[in-house]
Amino acid sequence: MKIKHFALVFLAALWFLLVDQAVASFSMTDPANIRADVERLLHRQYAELNAFTLEAMGLNEARTPVQPWTGSYWPDSLGGIANRYNNRTFPTVGSWIELITPYESNHKDWREAHGKIASNWRAMYNHELAQKLSPSEKYDLAMGDVSFALTRKIYQEIDYRYEYKQNRESGLWKRNPGLASWSGICDGWTTAALHLPRPVKKVEVLSPLGKVITFYPDDLKALASQLFARTNRWLNIERVGNRCRDRRPKMDYSGRPIKDECRDIDAGLWHTTVMNRIGIDQRGFVIDVDNKTSVNNHPVYGYQVSYFNPLTGAWGPLENSVVALAGVKDGKQALRHPRATKLVGVGMNLDVLDYNWPTGKPTDSPADDSQKRRIYYAYDLEMDDQGEILGGQFRSGNEHAETQPDMIWMLPKYQLAWSRSSMRADEGPTIDRNQIEIWGNIAWKYNARRGVVPKDWFDAHLQSAEFHYPSAEPWSMIDSAAPLAEMVYYLFDQARI
Image (cartoon, rainbow, N blue to C red; front, side, top):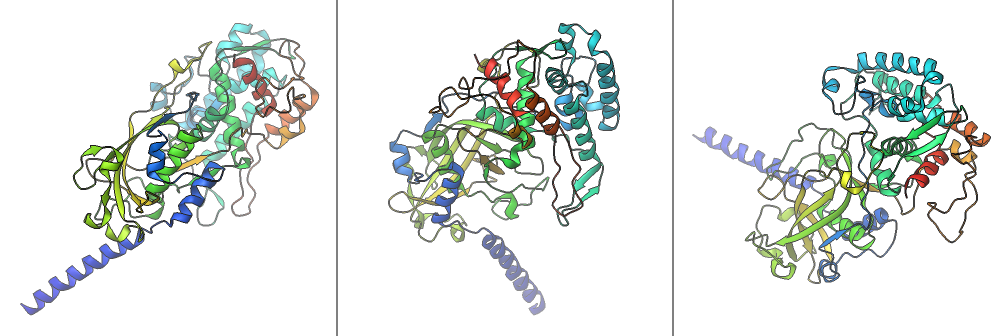
């Protein structure tokens, strides 16, 4: 009996020890760090962190003045933006063909199909080029490039990404064949959609080769997504949260992920960032909505906030929903900030755009956008007596919560992607030097009706389209292929009105 009793005591002590360790692993965020992180994300100072002030400002609901546009993540497994989405006999995004044609057979089909285009484009009518070419092939011909540099290098890069992966520990690229179905350029689509005007109409360009090249809005979105995805390491990106690499993250006793990388966004940081970025700055941001292995980036452009009493679950105004923290016994006491005295429950719905597979329509509008399924987060906010937000905890594993965000990231206002080689091309003089945005403010030296691409543009295009294998040095990067920024922005300037 004594041995049995001892065993029970030992197991109980071990269980409490494990619980204490799990609780201790949830490090609370210092309010000074919350402010620093929020202001770093916003690319500005003086973020508002007081819950009562944010509500008094009427910010319980907000949307950006301009809705970003939806686009594809252009899966690597289907050839990225070299995919001929308008050719119904070619594997297309979102089709049944995607499910039964693996990468190994796709890449052979790409090269064979591209070889036919490279050999026969001169004999094709303009409407055939418009319907049968991929976005990258259209771009190459518009630049007067009969070598199809961008298209070839995209194929080459995807082949490399299929064959080799960068080891997390050593940083070296090692042979490990395979591509995830979600692998693509969602990072490029989301940032481009937030920073480039909507291409509302098709644009026709006279190529130096004598052909009229028609760029549909989907073609322009593809080129912009490729540009932002393949040059975004040169952008002034700020991020919080690390990628969760577990397919099914393990949870602790309270239903929250155990690993730091799967729960490293503080709810107080999340709340204040969203309300400052969208509500005050009227700018959207990028969110990885899946708190698991896959990376699933989407643009966020709106939110609606409601409050509930953490003790009763009753919904109501903020002032009626705040309770004394000392009276809340939910097993999370050790997680709370030591200076927090108040607690309030928050439910937030997000307006998020979803992927939209390309169709080749000649026009595009907000009515064509695809809305992401309902994204809802529930969490607690820890505050002091004045309502200053000190931290918070996401509510996982109960009736309120869906999940929590994996990563959020954003760029400064007016930030555009420029590849290194595109810096060597001159887009033309600025019309109004006091105007920051380039749209309608550049006297472009290239004109689509003339059919003459400036030499510095063509030279920079060849350099931008180059792809280089990573070196043998640890943490070396793939030097990815990208379209010329000047050409992409010229096309967007023509398509925006």
